[in-house]
Amino acid sequence: FQAEDGIRDFCLSRGLGDVYKRQILDHGKNPRNLGKFENFNKDAKGHNPLCGDKVHVYLKVDENKKISDIKFEGHGCAISMASASIMTELMKGKDQKEVNELIEDFLKMIKDNPDLESNLISEDDKTKLMSLSGVKKYPMRVKCATLPWHTLISAMTNKPGEVNTEKED
Image 1 (cartoon, rainbow, N blue to C red):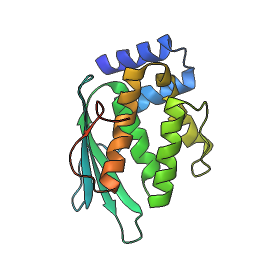
Image 2: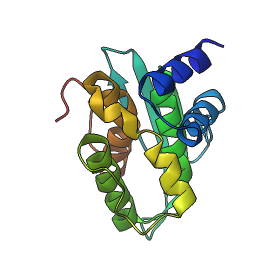
Image 3: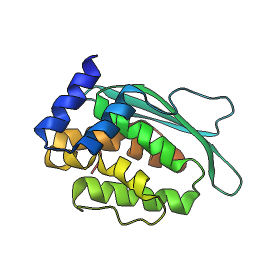
């Protein structure tokens, strides 16, 4: 399985521990919430042209601005697929404010912070997110990990056009 080899190599070369490696392997090999569902009311597409990652996020947001369902379709490197899988698990049931807080916390962790600060998720969920923290040393891999999250922002805000990692900050 080529993606598994890529994840294993990434984790080993970054010195990530077994817990983190297992998280990335598990989500990269068996992504959660993969697919499209009927009756979504928000969606957005994202593309990382340098790595070839593509993601399409589908949301069902209720009248209270809470995500009642979330799924994604896409293909790409194991890091982007694991990130999308973890993201969809964590965002289901969250309202707009919580979504914004988690996105901000994740993006800070990936770029700068050593830890996650949010109290909205369990320690197990923090471990899942922290499994992606090793990418911060590799700018090209940061784009792989953050693509689904920027695409979620676009879907939540109804931003027109495709998210493109070469045009993001």
